[in-house]
Length: 192
Ligand SMILES: [Zn+2]
Image (cartoon, rainbow, N blue to C red; front, side):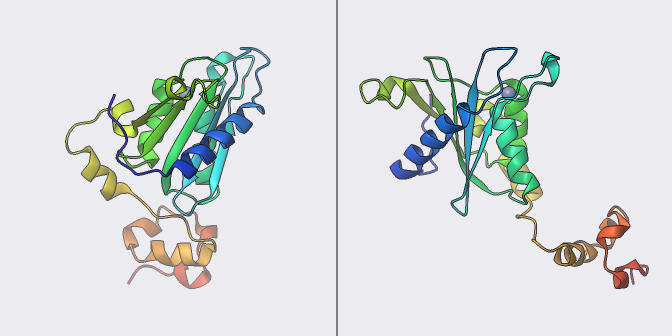
């Protein structure tokens, strides 16, 4: 299993692990009796967590790592440096196929992913309780994928919508796709 080359510090690894464990405690596991937690490290240092959320209709249950990604993106964050995932299992958990696709949409192919076992914070078992892989390892792509990801990467969303609308207005083709209530009045005129 290839090591990550992202250079996550030991401090960040420990921090992500702790947050993932804490997130797991919030899991809603009424139907599956299976809890998972995830912690996503943003490039600005903030950690966004997620937990698994069961549903009586199993198909719409949500995985912890997807919750973390959706929370982050809904807050305007799209730039990530690492992820940790943990469950109740005593072996490192891996993301399901759907989550791998979601992670690949927003994460650098070289981003490290810490796969934790439930006992990985126990010093006696630490070496067997954690594996570190990359997004690219979890969902291999063709050789052009890294370049394709760079092309579609979009920076964090500006906080104020006016800035956002101005950014989008710079591309006239995109203006027509933006809901009109996002646009300031002067943007309502046709593109020059
Ligand atoms: Zn999943």
